[in-house]
Structure formats: C-alpha cells, structure tokens
Length: 174
Image (cartoon, rainbow, N blue to C red; front, side, top):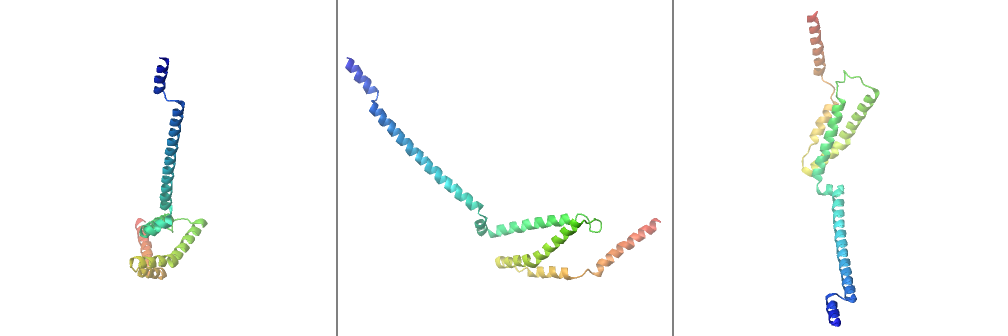
C-alpha cells in the first residue's frame, strides 16, 4: 500500500526533471517574448524618429509646400515691418525730441529699406512672376518714382494754411 500511495503521489506531482523542462520552456518563451517586444519598440522608435526628423527638416517641408512657407515669410515680414514703423512713428517728428540713438536707428532702418527695395524686392517680385505669372514690376517702378520726386508745392501750402489759420485764431482771441 505504501507503494501505491507513493505512485499516486508521484502522478500528481511532476518530477524534478519535468519541472526543469517546464522552467526551461518558460524561460525560452519569456526570452522570445522579450525579444519580440524589443524588436517592436525598436521599430516604433525608428518610425517616430524618422517622422520627427521629417517634420523638423524645414528644407524638405519648404520643398513640399513653398507657397505656404512664402506666405508665412511675407506675413512675418509685414508684421515685423509694421511693428517697426509704428514704433518709429509714435509721435510726429516735429514734436518728439530725437536722441542720438533714435537718429542712428532711424538711419539704420532707412538704409535697410533701401537695401530691401534695391535688392530683395526685385528678387521677390521675380519669384512671384516666375511662380504665379503675375508681373508686379510696375509697382516697384511707381514706388521708385514717388521716392525720387521732391515734395510738391501743395505740401508747402498746406503748412502755410495751417499757420494762417493759427494766426487768425490768435487774432480773434485778442
């Protein structure tokens, strides 16, 4: 009876050898699972890395969407230019006292405007004509004509008219 109970007990509990085989199979299964996870994570990392580098590569994005980038650049330039113009013209020139730094900055911005109108604007207009087929060179020419013309006599009369009006008001008060 002792042998019968021992064999019945042995059939319920696996032997040491069977346990070692099961442990080995579990280790191999875990190893394969970990390797599969590592491979998947590695592939996903490479995919994300490639996607991020494609998005951050501005040259490639510019090649894909030159019009959007061009519009963005023009918008940025207009905002910055308008901001500078507003900052320069806070008070009328006759009423504000100009420091040496302000005079230097005004001169610098005037020179930058000349460079922009002389070199950059014709180049941009050429690209617009090449890309869209629209010739805007007549706008450049009219702008250059306006800059070359001296102030008209009408502008002087306007100032004189203001002076005469001020004199009349002061005469009425007396």
